[in-house]
Image 1 (cartoon, rainbow, N blue to C red):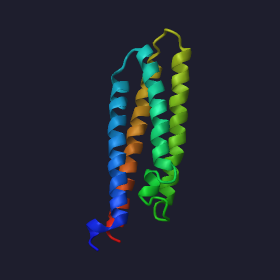
Image 2: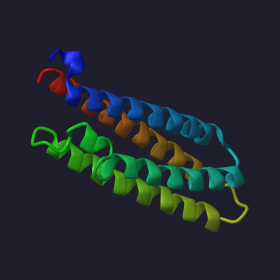
Image 3: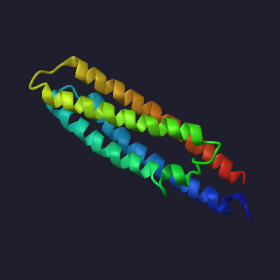
Length: 145
């Protein structure tokens, strides 16, 4: 069996491609958030981000999801997977809290909400980068089996 015929490598490659596509879609939303300066539109985008993150994280975390498909639950990857899942909960909480604060702020346009949204975007981009590193490592491991 050649490396390209390795079923583990094929499953990991498919999961990695799916991860890239979901992250590409997420990047579009994150770019829109960074470009927004008005509070009403930011409220809508934060709600969209929260919904999108919940769906995205479900694809990654649950059995048969991206982490599972990448073999990331093996001993070699267990610690980083735990960290990434923990980050999922913290980021969802941060987005939810910011969204709530944006709704409660009335018509005022506090700059701190926009700055915090940009900080969350930066954290999400760093998180996605770490996921791509995990996927690349899982793919290398599967191809070398």
